[in-house]
Length: 307
Image 1 (spheres, one colour):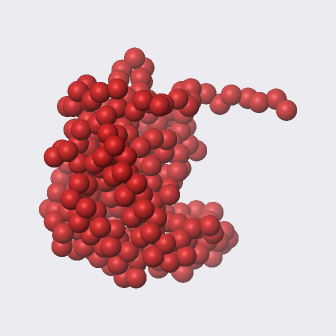
Image 2 (cartoon, helix red, strand yellow):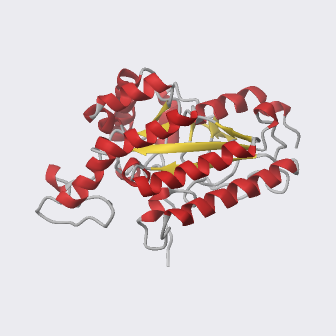
């Protein structure tokens, strides 16, 4: 079999290895916890707008010539109700989060953008639509990054300083983010429990891995995912406690939790997120922060961390 390299940066299979930095988080926290809301409703694949298939709702969508009203309505729940349930929960505890925002979704429901600005949540670039950037040519991807930045800045009160592509970036995404300018970091990979720097065209660029495919409510609808909210709670609480154990042993880390309004905005699942956040708050040594705050802390203090 003849393999054909597809380009892009080389893989890094080593990372920090056996000697991760001994990070100092604010107030000596043992863990930096980053809850994320993925807001994609209205920008997903939809047969009604001409896409060749509908997206993943509570069940897989279908391909064909007919509108998929089932999947459409699942996503509508996320924008009509679920996002507001999540925002109310965060407000209850005085917490701020990072919103991975597909710009078209915010444009279709600008009250969400206004709520992000009002609460001080972080708008984070998540594509113009919730589609795969790795399928785009470089010019299309460049234009849609710029369009997403403009839209989110206009509707959320501040421009995104972080970026996360659907599933996987293209071989050009990181270079385009650096080229566009204004990005403090990206969250494109899933490959570490700590931020790190990488070189992009000779420039140092910060990466906050989105280490959340395990701690992600999308697994409610995956075939090998969470069977109940209790399973999500158990996985996340176990992770928080194990991260804290390593933190107290001298190696504090970062943990991401991924949520979606159409999933965790449902009441039975909202209670799971409540239980996870209450556990983190009760620990007393967990810093719950926006990704921007974590990135800024890392930029200011990373040279002080022992190796």
